[in-house]
Image (tube, rainbow, N blue to C red; front, side, top):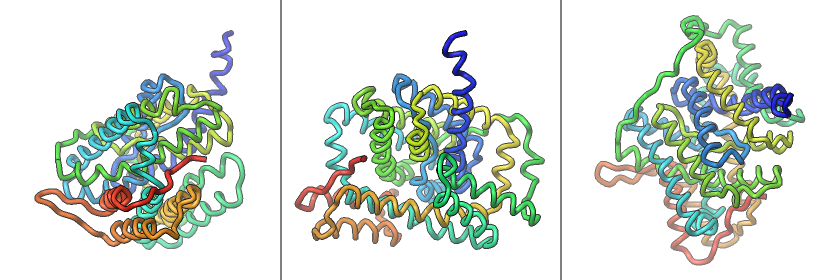
Length: 400
């Protein structure tokens, strides 16, 4: 019996386990933006396999939905329609491809100059804080379920150790859902109506330049997160993935997977911090394991009953998770500033951070002709421009 055959059962179990680490957040984004979670699972699985193809199967990552896109997807869908919004997601993937080419040409220093911590940190904070009203609104639909889900997630993330500590979202949803069942607050109609086997519903994007301009700037935060993930996974695997297969390849893989999500009618697919944390904890760095997770996601997407269960989760349960999750996203932005050693005593840095926060959270909008830009995207663009215009050099974002 070959070594591959011997290790296949173990690797399969590990692959399924990694999917559950990413499962909660992977299906949470589509649920919040009104997309069938089965298409998100399917595109995440296919996108991950595409990423592994682009990166020569060397990098152990799983691609999933990014929380950075929740607010812009929701608003862009309202403004330009779902199919128009999808063209924005495809364009975001194209931006990843462009940055991949620039990294190949000029090196990592270019990204560090354009996106230093005084830009990236507050943009990430805007992502979390701008979503806070959505979390409160969902939680207010049933505060009892919201508190149960919230407390479960807090207990898991604070008091538990090992792999379970990495899935507070999943645990909170499960416990909240069980509580909702016991209280008779679950509508089982979506489960009953769902077929056992069903292809996800694909939607073709429609070209909409306004939606593209609206969505493009939101790529900044996930792009920086991608760089940090490559350093983090490389440190665990004791390999330099930034050099080989190269950051240009990993970023291109992210971009193509994101564009694929747009073409399928799904959410963007990017490298995922939760799975990066699981890799760091378990020291499992075999890319084959992550490919098994991708195949498992595709299989789950074809089981209609799973989609039915996910769609039957009460809004109060999701809202409770959001109260924690969106706040934690904001703290990641603060941590980015702290870890980089950004000097907030400098007036120019204070100006950059302040303007990003007020523009992003305050709901500022810039309109020119038929195009408009607002929220996270506008704050990111303003931050980049201020950093390039104002004198002095800001600290780059560096992964530890």
